[in-house]
Length: 86
Image: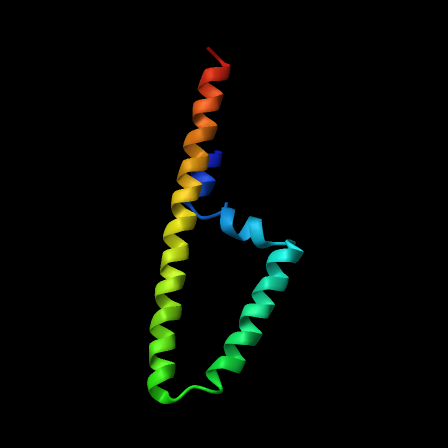
């Protein structure tokens, strides 16, 4: 199977490969989770609902940002490759 086919079928997952074994990322993820739990324990139901909307929007924003960064990186790699073979 080619690299493009593996990417298409989900056998290559750039995000998972980035975080796997990344101690700094895993530490930050643990900190975020711990702080979220502590914060949620102090919120009223209305505040909890607002916080959940904020958290969801932030995750969606990060997803868009990561997607755009991936696309830019891929385009840059192709551009550099095409220049190197000319």
